[in-house]
Length: 132
Image (cartoon, rainbow, N blue to C red):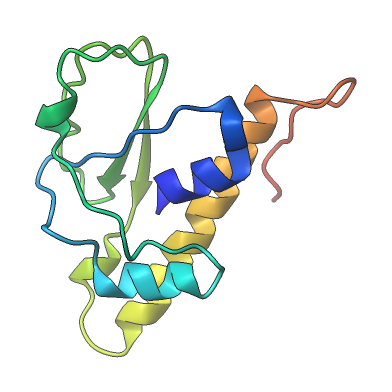
């Protein structure tokens, strides 16, 4: 979801890769559904392993890590690494799972928008700061 937001919000200003340490064969169906609600189609996305990206150089790698304190992976070739923590919506069962995916979707949209705004401020425009 984060990569999709960065592609949409950042446009051609960013080259975006997405990978996980233990990728599923397909995107989570609820993630696909909640992103479709906001006009982003993930149905054709195919999760990749971070092992596939070894040897690549990156200016910035954003690691999405669970809030449970799990260790973040080591990223070779990254000039800078940022870690964004979230509750894992896939770990929630039942009717609350869709709401959990929506919360993460919306939080990712906010974080990505703030990142893009801080990285690419318009002429004479100060970078955005998080709203309280």
